[in-house]
Image (tube, rainbow, N blue to C red; front, top):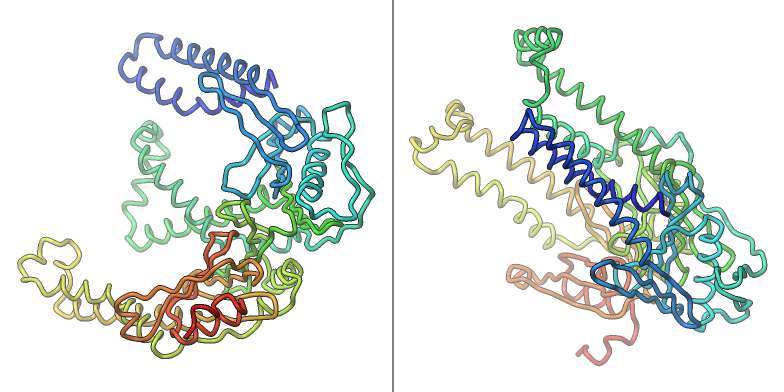
Amino acid sequence: MLLLTPVRTLGSFAVPLVLAVLGVRRGRDEDPWWLLVVVAGAALAVVFGVVSWAVTRYRFTDEQVQLRSGVLSRRVTTAPLDRVRSVDIEAPPLHRVLGLAKVKVGTGVDATRLELDGVSAAQATDLRTYLLARSRVAGGDGEGAPAPVDAPGRGGTSYLGPAQPETELARIDWGWLRYAPFSLSSLVVVAGVFGVLAQFGDELPIDQIDVAQDAWRWVVAQALLALVGAVVLVVVVGWVVVSTVTYVLTWWNLRVVREGRGNLRITRGLLTTHSQTVERAKVRGALMGEPFLLRLVRGAELSAIATGVGTGGRTRVLPPAPRSVVVQVGHELLEEHGPLTMAMVGHGPRARRRIHVRHQWGTLLVTGALAVPTYLLQDLWVLGRLPDWGPPGLLVVLGLVNALVAESAWRNLGHGLTDRHLVVQTGTFMRTREVLERAGIIGWRIEQGFFQRRLGLADLMATTAAGSEVLTAPDIPLDLAVQLAGRATPGMLDDFLV
């Protein structure tokens, strides 16, 4: 840790140091002040990292795990053992070289997690087993399970318990790489790279390279269509390369395992390895995402909905993969077959009308803009150069596009109910099917806007402690919403219904 902590601190100070060096060099090109800035910044970072390591301590008691940290502001973080809901093990490259790992303990209260950094890889595995076992025992869920002997690090003993069989739900198949380019997140990364190059392109010494100058003159001399085609080709190639590399780095050696006591464990990663374990009792559902491009190749993604883990209570289980595989693993995760494949109950013609009207607001705004006097339109670069038939044609095309989007949104909208789960499907470009365990529903909310009241529609929201803490079925007929809530949680609404 005396090596790891300063190196990590230097990494966190890298961006401020670079900005400081650029600022000093721009102001004083002849003076070596920028060297002093680098040396002083690096020295401060190392000192801060060593001091931070020296004041960090953690310990176990019979009821808590405690972490004390902070240099100027002392902070003590505690996690009750009976509230431990997830234990994640993470090992970045430098940790792996040194045989170390991070252990992140989630209690399900919020997104904050207690992090024990710098434990050995073997001790991290023992910590995960011990903490989850102590959670079952302290929480009263561990009937019949052997009690832990002692915490790791106190005398060298740890909870290991008898070996239990585990079930492998999924393993990475490199044939899934063909789905990587159909993820929109990779396109965002490529767009970000182009944005950075556009911002700092003037600083690059391209004007000093004759080959680059000649290439640019040739490109400019060609037709606009060739230029656009070249840009599209570069974007597509970059998109494919970035998405494939990101896919490999993130999902390398993926394994999804159901442990002997029902906990869900997900391991993955090439450079930085991740091992996430979620208590079975806190897995409340699943979310199957089908982006538009991924739907074209019959692919999907899968996330688990749990209490107090992951990002917004959601943990990625599978990357873009064949939809059949996602459905199979999702049903194994839910321990019920049908929620991800069942036909949805539609929300009717009134919901269809509302969705179409809402999507045509953009068309109405453009119509209003075109209704202003012609001499004002001449100041707009696009509208001022359109032929006479251009504005009406633009309105027709925009209206048709919005109508198609609205129709797709209505067709994707629906809900369903199984013996154990509530299912809601929404989305147009990103279609999602969210499945929530009925036992995890702790309340209901029904909201109606002004226009919804006129149409007899409502937004039905099932509140829960898992995921984003609410599952919404939008634009559902009010009488159907009340019936659905009553069937999903029998008896909960009896005192409120007339």
